[in-house]
Image 1 (cartoon, chains in turn brown, green):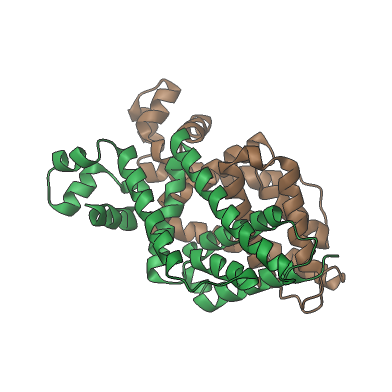
Image 2 (cartoon, chains in turn cyan, orange):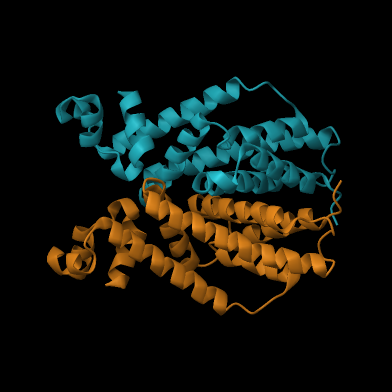
Length: 185
Length: 185
């Protein structure tokens, strides 16, 4: 069932994610799908939970790194650098339409974004302690900037994959990190 | 008609932007709305064109600035720093669901994003000529990073307006620009 939801989502976006479309993908009745997902909102919430699990699973299998290297790994981990991360990001960016129009889904998304910024801030703190970032670095503000940069890069790369090959995305991350590491003016 | 489309969009997102909802907002028949917008896709394209016009109109009325000040003004101009820009950005971010699921809308969005990066690159070139950015600055790559940063900040601020007051958004832009202006390591 999860795979069918995922396939419909990847092909048609959240707007096309309907109980009828999932039933057609499964070759089953809409009644069966409705039994698991009583509403479109339940379908959307399920798809987002699957996307979150997949991303967390990836992060667990990324070699641990500390400080600036950990920050770099965290930013690279969210970018569409593979087919799987492109599919996850398409689903995630598509979900913002529904999330912006629904208070509950919107609050969930705000919490997910804040949680990720906090994780990034942890790497910034360690990098500062190790002397890899200037002593005046503010972890929360630096993390907010880094998270904005990475998520905006996700959007630009998704819409224009030909202009954002893997190497260019990584180079943009490195240039951004160089800006953080430079002594502030 | 445009205002009704806009109101439905602001309240329900693109997923809720239907011919029936626009007709209800107008108190008219669906036939009348269908006469102007024969499909949901036509409605979506119209709403995006209106959003583009509103943003361009704002840019025209922003005091001209050159070099680094022009770059700063261009980034601030897209952020949700006012009620109007919040509404425009909600519509724009919401539109990515439909744009990622439709080749034509996706190509339009890719072209809009590339056009904005080119405009930002122009400010970077002028700033470099004026000695406000290091001589080794690459305009296209710097613009790609700045555009990613600004658009990601749009998303974070939309979902969490309480944590992203106007002053913080502007401070994050200034910190990002400081990173560009610092001598590269």
